[in-house]
Image (cartoon, rainbow over all chains, first blue to last red):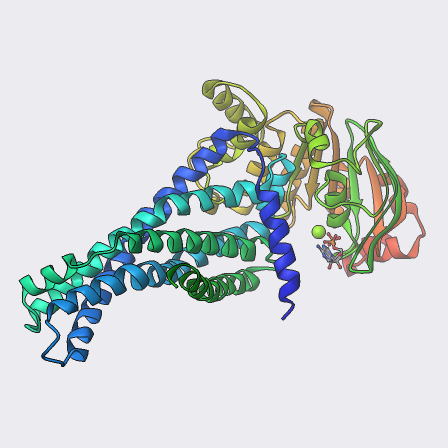
Length: 246
Length: 249
Ligand SMILES: Nc1ncnc2c1ncn2[C@@H]1O[C@H](COP(=O)(O)OP(=O)(O)O)[C@@H](O)[C@H]1O
Ligand SMILES: [Mg+2]
């Protein structure tokens, strides 16, 4: 892989983006559009995956805690911490990489192969900034909320599944999720979310922007966007966890 | 008037344009013809600054254009309109928003004034009551006309059209060709049109430049082109059996 070439070109792409907008109003319109797109557009899938994820984590934790000396409350603690620290920020980002990353890459890729990007440039618009900046800003603004909603829904899903299956009582679970709560975990989760938002939007935009050819290549860019942003999310998940939590 | 002085362009060591010199006059439709892959689109993109040339010089009414930075090109931007091969309308915007886009960019007109200008331009290309349609709801010919309306909206002095009638039926092609010719003369624009359609050549060509493998092979008027005995140009013009039969007569 000529990853050095991509790294260099990605860097140049990022640098071109940091400019003074030609006309603030046209950027603002795009920003609002993306906010709606990313926020409401992803709530459904995020809600669904979060509830089920919380349910599975809770039942699995009960199943693994066979030691009668450990109180069942611990299930609530473990479920809460794994949802807040790992599942909501990382898994939701992977889900968003699939949903939003692929749509960013195919939208920008289509604009490239149909010369819409050239049409923007002709009008003196810095196309990389115009197409990417509002998306990055919208993702940074909305993804933290999406992830926080996912945390609540995940913990809620655990409660529903645990009590419905009769493996943990409602009061034990609720006591557990309130026990020894570390607020910094939420801060850490948001730091991860912000990093992942940047990865999803810029990597996918980069893939779309440098599409060459036609419809087939747009599909490839879209796949690459998901693959590369997912890999980078996992790598940065590891790096950030190592740096901040140890 | 646009002047090209010895322009050359290579991609990854492959020469696409070689030492092309020519000039295109104001108020005329200047045609660049050539087979596909001969470098017409690349030459047009060099002229508008989407692709940087390797060597040579491009002048807009005597003012140097090539070699300028993005910022230095800014004053030229409002003067340039371009119609791309597939129309290149913005998918996420309606017809009206597409035509208004350059006005938002370049002017400080009020919304009413902009709407008025949009309707004037749409009317000029014989499109009415399509303002709120999306590009996917338009036919090929309508897309091209909206693209022309968007290109002329900010009153450009230079108009570039890349194969404006590719993919259109012969009748719609002639309508589009004539529209370009009328607009060029009406607003005294320097117009450059890429085409490989001989109907366009006969219909609207004021000056014709024939590109062959990235080189300027021939240039002249419509009358000249039918009389030239240049082999490549005859192969190009009289490619079909019908055309060969006509030439014999
Ligand atoms: N960005 C590019 N990178 C590399 N080669 C290119 C690029 N754009 C065009 N070419 C090549 O330049 C040649 C001329 O293309 P073009 O100008 O599109 O021809 P046409 O006369 O059909 O418009 C083609 O062989 C094409 O492959
Ligand atoms: Mg072409």
